[in-house]
Each structure stands twice: as C-alpha cells, then as structure tokens.
Image (cartoon, rainbow, N blue to C red):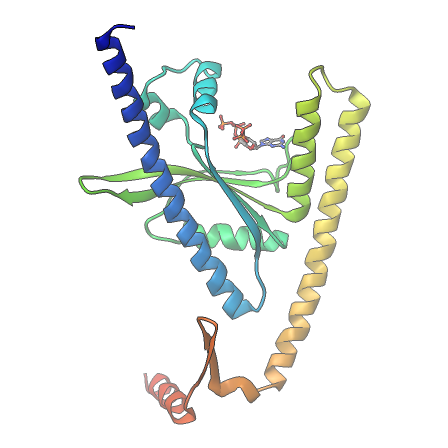
Length: 249
Ligand code: 0O2
C-alpha cells in the first residue's frame, strides 16, 4: 500500500469509529431509561419485572456480513439506513404481562419513536420462536448535532429466552438441515415453554391479589418512605396537608 492508500484507510477507520460511537451513546441512553423504569416499577409494584438485560453493539464484521447477505451497498449511509439492530437489547422479564407493560412504558416516552413492532408472542414463528421485537429510535445529542439512532429491543420471558438460546445453539452445531422429527420436537418444547409462562402468570396474579389485600389491612408503614436505599419518616401533618390540597382541587 502506498502512503495515500494508508492515509485513506486510516480516514475510513476513523469515520467508522466515529459512526459506531453514536450507537454506543444510544446504547447508554437506552440503558439509563431501562434502569429508571426498572427501579421505579420495583418501588411501586414491589417486584422486579426485569430479570436481566443484555446489550451489545453489532460487530463491524456482522454488519458487513448482513450488508453482503442483503445485497446492500457497503457505505456508512447504507448501514445507517438499512441496519437497525446495531444496538441490540435483550430484556428478559419475569412474566408475559410484564413484556407488554414494559413495551408500553418504553413507547410512552416522548423522545422515543417506534419504527416497527414484531409480535412473535401473539404470532410465534413457524419453528416456535416467541419474543416481542421493537425497533425504536432514541435521540443522541452531540456537540454539533442531534441524531435519532435505531435500537432493537427483544423482550421475552425467562422460558422464551431459555428456548431461544438452546434453539440457537442447536442450529450453530448443525451444519446440515435439521431432521423433521427434531424440528417437531423443538416446536413441542416451545409449546411447553408457553404453557409454563401461562401457569406462572396465573400464579403471579393470584399472589398479587393476596398482596393487595394485605396492603389494605396494614397501614402501619403509612408515614415511612424508602428512597435511595434510605428510609425516611414522613410527618403525618405533611401527608394530611397534601390530601386536603388534593381534595380542595
Ligand atoms: P443476531 O446475531 O442475533 O443479531 P432483520 O434484522 O430485519 O434483517 P429479521 O429476521 O426480519 O431480520 O428480524 P427479526 O425477525 O426481528 O429477528 C431478528 C433477531 O431475532 C435475530 O437476529 C435473532 O437474534 C432473533 N431471532 C429471530 N428469529 C429467531 C429464531 O427463530 N430463533 C432464535 N433463537 N432467534 C431468533 P439475527 O439477525 O439473526 O442475529
């Protein structure tokens, strides 16, 4: 390579780095949003709807392979326009109902725009795959510009995640076509995972109902508040003042 070619390659590498930085900021932004939702939900509903979250930036190699597979131009413009899963989140929820609750909470945020929603829970894929896929944009504010960056969110339950991870592993190990009987078996296990989710959801509802009844009976904690892992006393007169103001309005 001559000097000029080396210089051009260096510039291309720097452009790619700057380009991917924007996605890293979008990942940070979405992470903060999810942490806030998780903490707020935990506080008011007394349980954690998010079991765990994994996030990743798609590697340049995977981006390149996807462009080639889809016969798209290999340019930064083309990547920005066509590859919407450079930032990917996998959010694993405790119960099926949490998936839709979380999806709604995310979509209700004013600075988030929904681009596509694929509901593989209501309409599982032929192989049995279940998950809710959202593509959204989040704004990223930089020193000289604002960009709306695509983020993919895959939201699913523990059972759906377990199934998808194993199915993925099975496919990776097999270089040949998978025999029909194994495909049928995989589909059957997806049904079992779905049945488990439905039964856990029923149990969860029953327990929530009992908790709500208990809360109505126990008013001892009325003048205490927990914030930032600290327990504060709330003067009763202060609470009464809030209540009378609200009643006046
Ligand atoms: P990776 O490495 O996981 O990111 P598109 O992204 O729009 O070109 P598609 O198929 O229309 O492709 O998107 P879709 O249906 O939203 O699926 C995207 C991602 O969902 C996949 O990413 C997988 O992670 C996951 N997924 C979809 N179908 C299945 C499935 O049958 N089994 C499993 N285990 N995962 C699935 P990528 O692009 O394949 O790769």
